[in-house]
Every structure is written in C-alpha cells, then in structure tokens.
Image 1 (cartoon, each protein chain N blue to C red):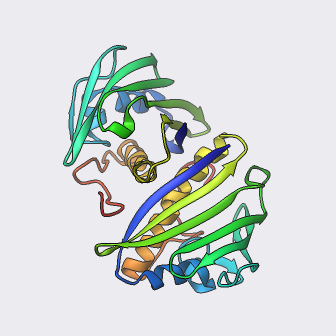
Image 2 (cartoon, helix red, strand yellow; image 1 turned 180 degrees about the vertical axis):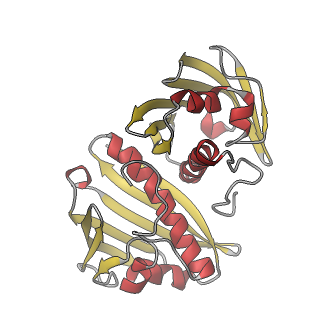
Length: 148
Length: 148
C-alpha cells in the first residue's frame, strides 16, 4: 500500500469557509474541477467530478463539520479503486491547516507520482480560492506534465 | 516506511539541461535554494543546501548522466535521517519527465506531509527554470503553510 500526503496552510480564521469549499458544489467547483455535480455535505452522498480526460465519483464516507471530510472512490480509474481521501482541518495561529491524505494505492505506479504532484497543485488552488476568492480548477488548472 | 513521489514534465528536448540543473551548483541554486554550495556531478560529493530555517547536506550516492541522480541525506533534520532522494529522467515526446522519490521516511509525520507539498512546489520551480530561465528557489519560493 502507498499513500499520498500533503499539508497546506490557508491564511484565514474561518475554518468553516474551508470546510464549505470541501463540501459544497460551488466550493469544490472553485478549486478542483469546474465540472462538479452533487454536494458533499451528507454522508453517503455521491459527488461527480469530471475532467477533460475522465473523472471520479466520490462517496462521502465521513464528516465532522469544520474538522474532517472523508471520501471513498465510488467509480474512477483502475489505479484509484479502493483508495480513500481525507481532509483534516485545524486552526493554527492565523492559518487553517489542511492535512490531506489519499490512502491505499495498491502500487506506487507512475500515475500515482503524477496524482501526488497534481494534488499539491489543486490544494494550492484551494488555498488561493479561500485567500483571494479565485482558485484554479480544471480546465484552468496549472499543468504539470504531458498527462495534464 | 513511507515515501514521497512526484512526476513533472518539462517542455524541452534537452534532457542534459535538466540533468545539469540537478548536478551543478548554479542549477540547484536556481530552483531549490539560492544558498547551495558544492557540486553534485561526482558520486561521493557532498552538497550543502541551506534555508532560512536550517538545511540539508546531501551525499551524491549514484549518477547515470542525463538519466538518474540519487542522493542520501548526510546531515539534516531528524525526520529526514535515513532517507534517500532520486530523480529519474526520460524523454517523452517534447517533455523531459522527472520521476521524483524521497524514500524511506520512518513515519508519515506531519512534517512529511509538508515536505511532500513543498517538493511539488520546488519541482515546479525546476520546470520553470528550464522552460523560462527563471525558477523560484528559497527564499523566493512559493509559501505553502505556516511552516514555510
């Protein structure tokens, strides 16, 4: 098993604003992909994220308002099957810290390397959305390699 | 054991230019930290990287010119002890692909989450250095959280 881990700090005292960006259609469309449908504010909900090259359906597996969001992959690329994504939030000084985990990859394949870098870029997009009001979701996301 | 993995693609047909950015003082100072001393073009060399908050001494453990650079931590923060860093390069279409690994973390501590995101940012700085002539090394690096 292999895991992707990240940490960002968002300069805000509103941990609720960060939680909203992870649980509402408008929030998620503001930093991950513009083509997001569904809402992530209830356990069991399915959120559909679509990108140029395909997409992911995420099932909301756990929520602890303003502190934790957990998704399980419901449908998506073969390499993502069985994986789980979590966002843990906490306030530290004037930052909301996001600890991100994309857990349980079967193999550390080259696509996992790509997704790890890409998650960092999207988390920086989340940071920007909250700090400036403007994120960079797909299709205006920062491209990192020949795969996207 | 836990590993950080990343993948970037640099739009260039000069794999040698990317290798130089990973093995010369000027190259490394152009994307990771301006305060770099030593050269990484011989196995056994020590390169000293210094940042505001401390630094790392890396021993060049293996080289395969234009294809592979491997470092072992010689000195640095406790969490990095025993870790190993590698950059694998290959040409794909009009991109040089860099597969990056920072291997053998004893524990997936919060600092590892931070370093994972920060490595993505520095690899994007390497991409920028080669594509535009200008990277964003410390201290002008993009800040990601309250630790840096």
